[in-house]
Amino acid sequence: PPFATFVPAASNPAAAAVLALDTALGNGSFAACAFTTALEMTGQNFGPGMHCFLAGVVNLAGNMTLTGDSDDIFIFRLQANLTTSVASTITLVGDVDPCNIFWDVQTDVSLEGTNTLLPFLGNIVAGTL
Image (cartoon, rainbow, N blue to C red):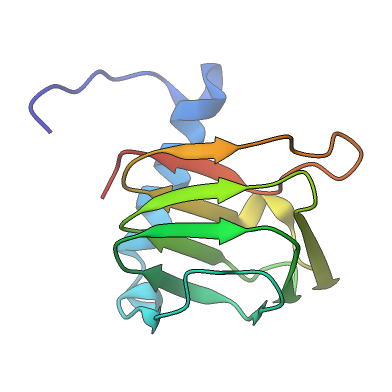
């Protein structure tokens, strides 16, 4: 990037999320993307790893499922926008830790009408690809 500012991760949750994402992306086990052509996440079940979506608008209009263990990392890299609806939910199967879910979105994120009783899960870092 043309401009960078250092913010200690301990004093800033956003900086901590970026640091964790950088660490996860630097881990060799996440070097390859499991590319998908589907731009609709509703109804899909994802395992741990890096899941990449090409250009377009990626939608979550219903339920998606993440299946794994507490140490598993889920990274969703979107070379597109991410849009959710009030009906969107993320179901965790197994001991998936929501802190280990990362959304690396190239452009815009729109959590339209996200249900406050079933909040969107994970760490969103936008404009980073």
